[in-house]
Image 1 (spheres, rainbow, N blue to C red):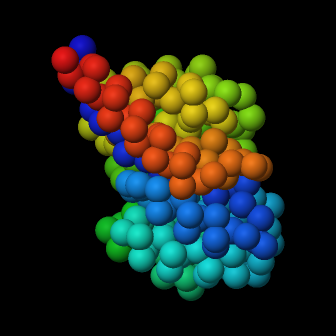
Image 2 (tube, rainbow, N blue to C red):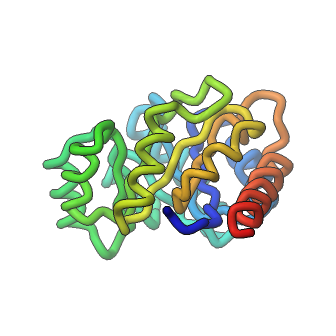
Length: 216
């Protein structure tokens, strides 16, 4: 049986629009503990993405979280990010990026959607693997396959994993119960009409409650 673990929160910026991204992210980070923020290009071209990341990285780092750029090593370098995330599920690319950038940058990946594929990725010794797809959190809860992979990985492998949660904070207990070291939220924090600070505070309260219950 996997020992209980109190996951830490990761934020994914996918829903943020340029016009208010900095303000909404600052609000979220004021709400409580956040381990890192994954800055997703979300369809932006390189120049637009660099401007987006340049605005967000200082906010993230000032809050004590790690700023991790998704998919573009040049942007990661130019904006002085703390890490680089590859979402392609390409084993060869992941290995090459790890060899080139670790330990100077945190390097993680996603897109590895079977146990075998995930274990092959793990052989390259990334700093973490993420289970889930950015922008695919329209359902209230985490994807069933991602939940199963995170629970299996957490019980079997020492490399940390991040589980991408669903779009509704009411489902967060299920994600926290997997024993994944990190749970990522995107739409549940940054979706239209929500209060990012309150969402982060609620997520941390849920993590505390689940850990206390599972440790009893």
